[in-house]
Length: 317
Image 1: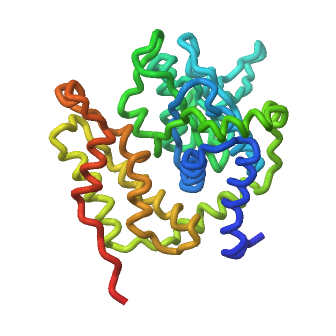
Image 2: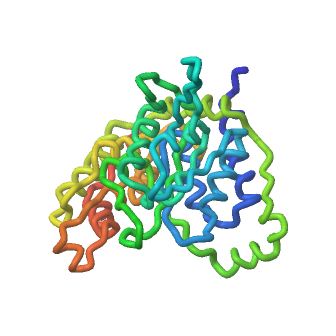
């Protein structure tokens, strides 16, 4: 059934409202996850234990009637434990047993606790929405989103995520402790939150329809050049050893269209881009060792870029 523009605009609002019934606070994380879902991206969530990372993913999947799978990454996990495998019988026949990657929303919990070999099992799925096993290609469900979490780098039993893995994540967000007011709200609703039930308010097909509609949001040429200028300024910063790849520019471009759609506009403004620069670029920046020793952070580099790159002026009427 064809949806009108007004009906499509209501779907993201219904999703956020449904998720907020079970997840208190974390408005920025919710919005970033929604933007990623509506642009075919993936999100890396960092934060302390017990800060609702798993709950966020499960509720987003439930809100649009999607399948949710959680993969607990450990050092002994094999790639086939993620992607699936062929089970061969004594009569010579075989059957494909799909792994937990076959879901609409996949939570890769503590991704940096598994070996690089198993980490690599996510790469094809995240980039091409498919897995190849024994030469056979298996498409993944649509929409498809990976939510990765990781423990602090350097902790016992961790394997730092390489740049190629980090670059597959459209955004990185922080899931921090709640404010005292939010924590009080959690305690008041604890009996409901311990067994949250999020009823579907949309369907996967409706999410795909919104994704297609967002592609029609207009981006002025000056705004597109602004995206490129920001990425270039970060790459050329003297404190940066490895800068963001073109995937960062793509994340800003596509994400800003989604933000404009969520705000009820059919065009992007520079503020849409600026809002997404930290979650789109920070995890793609590797600093020079001497800069790290001086206390420089990726956020400092981003602040300099946002300050120094001229913001395009609105087009004259």
